[in-house]
Length: 114
Ligand code: SF4
Image (cartoon, rainbow, N blue to C red):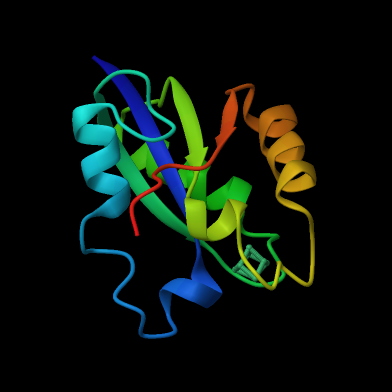
C-alpha cells in the first residue's frame, strides 16, 4: 500500500470547523476515493502554518521521527480549494516548492465529501 503525508491548512483547521481529526481526508485515503485512486496508508498529517514557511521542515521532521517516507504528499481539499483562498501563496506554488524541496510528488486535494 502506498504511503501518504497529508498537509492541511492550519488557519482552517484551527478555526473550529471540525477539521481535521474527523473523517474526510482520512476516509478518502483509506478507501481510495476523491483524489486517491487507491487506498493509501496515512503516515503523517501535518498542518501548514501562515505564511506557509514551515511546511517543508514539518514534513521532513514527520518523516524523520516516524521513519516512514511518504510515496506521495496530498494537500487537503481545505488547503487546495479554499474560498477565499490563501492570502500568502497559491496552492500550486506551494506544491511546487514542496516537490522541489522533498523530491516527492504533491497532489492537490484529498476528498470531495461535503
Ligand atoms: S499559509 Fe495559507 S495554506 Fe498555509 S495555513 Fe496560512 S492560509 Fe492556510
